Image (cartoon, rainbow, N blue to C red; front, side):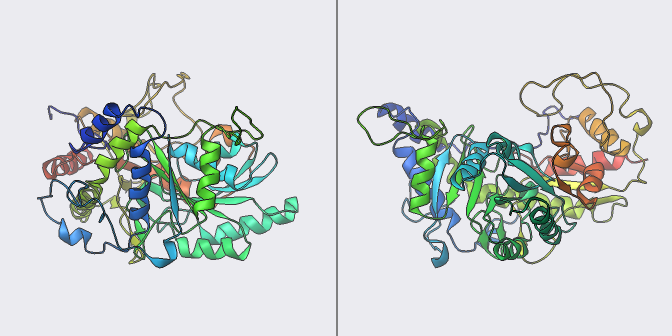
Amino acid sequence: MKKNRILLCLAHMSGNEMKYIKEAFDTNWVVPLGPNVNAFEEELKRFVTSSSHSDGEKRYEGENYPDTINAHESNPDNLWPDSLPALERKQVVALCSGTSAVHLSLVALGVKTGDEVICQSFTFCASSHPVTYQGAVPVFVDSERDTWNMDPELLEVAIKDRIEKTGKKPKAIIVVYLYGMPAKIKEIMQVAGKYDIPLIEDAAEGLGSRYDGQVVGTFGKYGVMSFNGNKMITTSGGGALICPDEESKNRVMFFATQAREAFPYYQHEEIGYNYRLSNICAGIGRGQLTVLDEHIAHHRHIAKLYAEGFKDMEGITFHGNPDEHCDSNFWLNTITLDSNLRVAGQDEAYHEAVKGAVGGAAGVVHSTGKVHTDCEPNTNVEAMRVALDKANIESRPLWKPMHRQPVYKDCPAYGNGVSESIFKTGLCLPSGPLVTDDDIAYIIDAIKKSIV
């Protein structure tokens, strides 16, 4: 057994962060605004509007990675410099979380009580919970099998049906880039455009992923980024919203800072929120940006090792880029297990109720005392998770589809069975920047040894 636990995904400090944190303290900018926040937003803007880094994998392929990529210290004005003209109006607002970015995109679009918002079902709850904050109703749409993301054909079916049933269009569409994999965004954009419904891209897991060379999060009206501690880069906790233009950015910033009107005293005519990123956290983000390309290259390198390792393993399928349009960052590498695959300990799976958080899950969980729910991973998947845990390897089931979550049982849903079938057979594997080639070999070997 390995001495140190192999973690699923954890952002790695580059060593450059302390410079910007020190500046924040030295200048007494320790509030949710300041020079680091402004600079972080500009640097993020340059990244999301940059042209394709199609040579990225070639530059960093192999075992050796540079210490920094386009570091600010050596080239502060040339970080991802080649903007695509069509994207030049995009602006970025740094916020306290990716969830707050989703919420503010809905606020900016005027989503209110009684409205409906189409959401991808196969994802984390942060995409749909903010819809309920606004008193609106999530309408869940299932996935297609290639990317595991929202099915464009089913999306149109849902829109037509909601118009027929309610007499009005959904107010917005939220598509997600699950585990970093780009969705079929061109097809989804065509459907959204046909019905003139604004598109929000939840790219929280997709920082650095591209579709046809364009950074995900920049196709729709708004794009969401996350810098949580387990993402490609981190600000400890934080996020950002990609806005279509300067006017939209200012409107979002207004709501993110308690919606204060222009008077010498505090005048509030709309409800606002305390959602801005702190200057200290933004300093961490600036340091992290210097190694973003390196992190992306490392995740893709790990994906290649997994793909090669599972290539000839019967009953295990690695989820890679489905076509030439998709260029995933492989934030989390995932596999599916054939339902007929036998795993050691499978007959004992789900025999004991979980009492606390599993793996790296954060926060306080509610212990129910129950062993089963009406939609759960297959017994061989749970047995594999337990076997890997015993080998000191953290793994985790895929996201449980939102339309199968009890909290959303009364919401409209348009399913095709894809997300449920993938959820029941899938597993996330360690993918962070600290995972080594030897770790990957150890993980693949542990999986092989678990199969009977």
